[in-house]
Every structure is written in structure tokens, then in C-alpha cells.
Length: 155
Image 1 (spheres, one colour):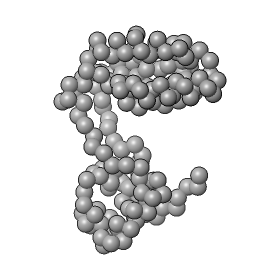
Image 2 (image 1 turned 90 degrees about the vertical axis):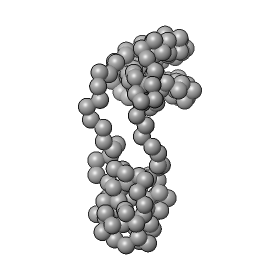
Image 3 (image 1 turned 180 degrees about the vertical axis):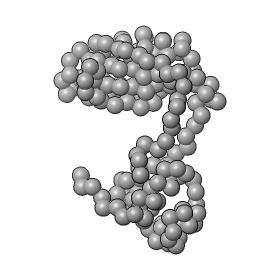
Image 4 (image 1 turned 45 degrees about the vertical axis):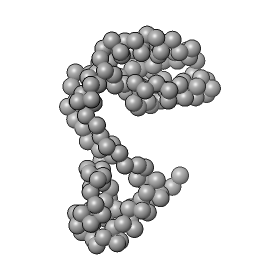
């Protein structure tokens, strides 16, 4: 996959959209200093190139009753390609797992989990995660408080 050549205006567009994906094209064009039609063309180009993957709302989990955020470091019994793919696929069916990464080091996967409460999270870990046929070890980390929350890419 080739890296897309982005100029300063493209980068400003991405920075502004990462900050507020709901703004109108007119507002975006004003913020980046170009007129609306070329701004829209640039946004569409960024979307078509896959640089902008999607637009979505960032929800306040605790206001929706999801008060627990945790991370699970999962080690598999065997790291064959088939086992890695099978475990990765299994994470798709676990609503409590909001994001998952395959990692290197002491663990094979890092799971970002959000649950209503500690009981719900414990039930998931014991009844689902550790019960998975590929899982050897699970280490959990309960979060205390989020101290930083910014877009995923520094621009």
C-alpha cells in the first residue's frame, strides 16, 4: 500500500475533521482557508483513498451506564496463524470488547473492554474469555480514570 501524498491543506482538513467530524463543508473550508467546492473535492479524495475511514459519534460510556473500562492482555496456547486468526475472529462476537490489537511481547492480544460494572466484566473474563479454546493466559487491568483523549493520529 502506497502512502498518499498529503499537502498542508489536506493535513489541516484531517486535523479539523478529527476534532469535529460533524461540521459542514462550508465551516471546514473556512477553517482550512479554501473555498467550499475544492474543500469538498479534497475530503472526497481522502475518503476514496481510505485516509478517512468513517464518521461516528464518540459516546460518553458512563452516561449510558457503562462505568467500567478495562484492558485484557491475552496470551494464546499456540501462536499458529490459524489460532491467531480464530481468536481475532472470536473478538468480533464479544460486544464487551470494543477494540482489539494483535501485539508482540508477553501477550498476543490486547483487548479494550467496556462493561456496565465489575460483575459483568468478571463474568466475561471467566465465562467467555478464559473459556476460549485458544486462550492460555489473561491479565486484566482495570482503569481508574481516563486522563487523555484525543484523535487517534497526531496531525
